[in-house]
Amino acid sequence: MTQPATMEGLLTWTPRGGLTAGPADGGRLLVADSWLVRDGRVRGLGRHRERFLRACGECDGPPLRRLLEFWQDMTAALPRTGEWFPRVELAADSGELRLLLRHAPPLGSEIRVWAAGQSDPRALPRRKGPDLDVLARVRRRATGEGAEEAVLVTPSGVVLEAATASVLWWEGDTLCLPEPRLPVLPGVTVGLVQERALRLGVRVAHRERTVADLDGREVWLVNALHGIRPVTGWTGGPVRAAVPVRAPEWREWLDGILEPLPEK
Image 1 (cartoon, rainbow, N blue to C red):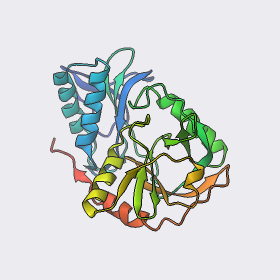
Image 2: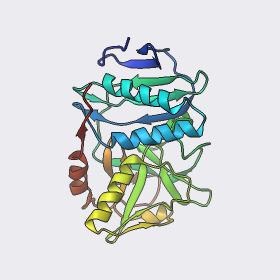
Image 3: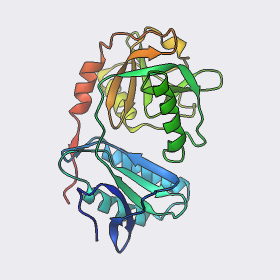
Image 4: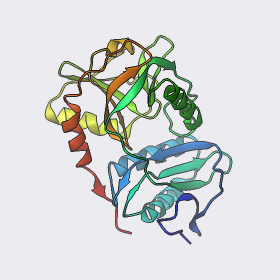
């Protein structure tokens, strides 16, 4: 039987039993995906679904039919009140499909970033899940430097993304992001931002930049939890943050496209 939606913790799914209380320690992950649920509304849920299904397929996960059944049960179990940050998982050791149901942390509207540039430690940068633990260590190191996030870079110093967010920046009237050939996670929220830019006629360009090249530019960290957070401070280096003149309007737009969850 599926557990009540207000129960926090790890729930394991089986075809006959639905979602039931899972292990205290989830162990290693092959795939994960997460998003914000605010009073029963979510942004880009179909895109998260497609990314999760694709990643499970790439690592020989359960058959598509089982994945779709899990997704349906998972969606029905999501709370319709309050702010939540659920995570769907494919466990590495057991091959189980799971839902980690957790309250959302306090949401931020801006962020301070460590300017040193952290060499990318991920083993599988294009798939969310296997590297979550190592990325958590990167964030802890950034916290020790007086920041909330760290920017991952290539061996030559080219900006990739942050530990938990995509990196976007503005060069004049052009919205910029890393080259797609670089090892970056296909971000759901950054995809929504790109599409809006194209609809509005805003030029979008893929460019290779170092952290130093972002000096004095409006830089955003973008993810499914916080949406758009402009960088308002850099620590550990001479990089200066620009006044975020564009971010408020784009944040308002992004907050406005939350859609109701499907009916149970």
